[in-house]
Length: 427
Ligand SMILES: *Cc1c(COP(=O)(O)O)cnc(C)c1O
Image (tube, rainbow, N blue to C red):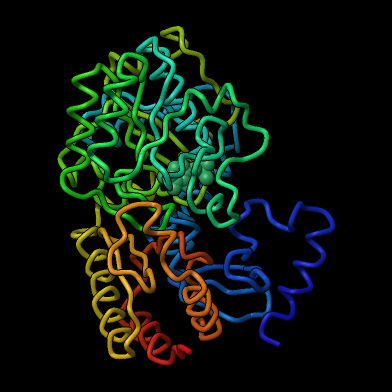
């Protein structure tokens, strides 16, 4: 049996951890079967508890953009660990990473570190509300901004996978301040502003969505949001937890040339350690405590080990010539070649891709919103997932997730992946 030890570990885990996992999508509920327990990772590869290796297309859901256990990052974290794990005081390192980010990302003057993407988005919304004095936020169906109450309204991936987009435990009072809109529907969002414009503190969006599978903004949708927010005095928040330092160093703001008022980060920014952040112009960011009145805090925020991992990762990205061109090229090759193989097999599909983020949707011809992502053939994706897994290719375990290409993927891994896709038997 391929996953013997994983099976035993999963059985044992379920005794002590709800559902056996510490984050739901890891449980393979969507694709079925037993989740694979990993024991180590290096470069492009994961090694599971049974000793099998996999080419990794999740990369810890994005953070491992350099590939796993990168030498420089490893060394930097080891050296930092010698100096202490956490002080609960300011450190020079925090200014160093803040300066590096502010100097290389458009439209931000200041950044506040937190410990997860959830915290970043939750805090950015509080800041937007405090700054504008308004209560309502707009979010898009299928976009995920972490698991804080205000966002668990049609939240994509994890939530969509389980078919309960509205979580119990979120009060009606909270839900009433979250307005829902359809991704890429320019008319609808204009309508929402016509009715609620004076009450809207912020629009929050994944500028390239990754949590309903990869879905791109179309017909200048982001520019449209920018002008609506300007017209009504609302803030535009880009949730760049996935796109930040991935589509480009300056994320979607840089790639699409659209300015956000607040930006949230996570994933790549911590290089594999638990880090999130939110950033914006001084006038808004200084409304935060201790300078301003909007409260936000964290015992382990700016933790030195996490900052060192993040800083070293970001430095590597900046100092590697053509870093983004290279990972984008890898993704482009996979996109093109997988498309070709599926066409040869007569399998109808749609591949959405922006830079090094991509998803394969089956039995649909275009996917620009959550409804369209949901209308794809997810049973076929699950079949595809398991056949590739058995051949040592580790895709995200849900058709509502995005593949993240790392810089460690070379021609060898691409060939191995394409060979597995060629062997895909579709019945
Ligand atoms: C992962 C993710 C989050 C939440 O980040 P966590 O670190 O898991 O809390 C928020 N927004 C987006 C777009 C994400 O992909």
